Each structure stands twice: as C-alpha cells, then as structure tokens.
Length: 138
Image 1 (cartoon, helix red, strand yellow):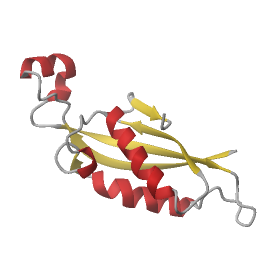
Image 2: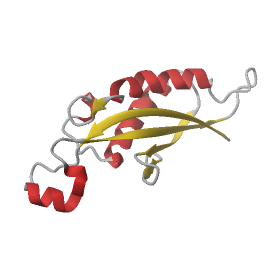
Image 3: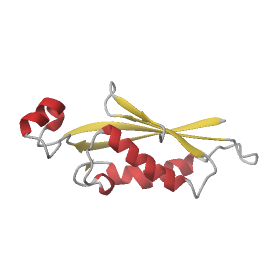
C-alpha cells in the first residue's frame, strides 16, 4: 500500500459560538475564538490517498488530478471566506476544525470515487502551526 499526500493552503475566518448559550458562556468556553467579529487563520490541508500504483503509470493517483479535485471541491469554496456565513457545507454547523474536517472528508470521498481506485486515507488540517486535527473517516 502506498500513501500519497497533497498539501493545499487557504485562508478563512470563522467564529466558534453556540447560539443556545449566552455571550458569557461562549466567551468562557471558546475564549477569543468566540469574537463576534470573527477571526481568521492560514490553514494547511494535507490530503492522504492510499492505493496500489497503477502498473502503466506507476501512480496511485495522478497528483495533478488530486490537486485539481481538492482545489475545485474544497479550496475554491473556502479560501478567503467566512466558514460560518459563506460556505454552504458548513451552514448550521459549528465551525470547529473537527466538524470542518469531517465535512471536507465527505466532499473529497465523493469526488474521488469516480476518478480513481485509490481511497481517501487521512485528512490533516492545520489551523495554526501549533494546532491541527486528523481525520480518518471513522
């Protein structure tokens, strides 16, 4: 089994906020991330696809194709956007990295299925150089 990785970068704003809670409770739980005027990050998304290399090309997946899928299906929808307001697949959801990465998984899994026999293995989303989340579709 071979694991292929593609890194993409995007910038986005969001707010962590539970509308069922008071402003005070939101600030207590989410701190500055509950700022009513949003806050932003320089995100890094690492997509890992696994599979057996094709005997004719030697590729698990053509990295150009993988990059085009990630850009079309995710990056173009989130780059320089407000995750809470502008991103259709995040509407009505908490804009935490944990929820965000799970939604990205659903999108990429569907988009990859018709173009490759390789499978999505892992997503890693860096929110800051110190904070990141991993998701394996489980």
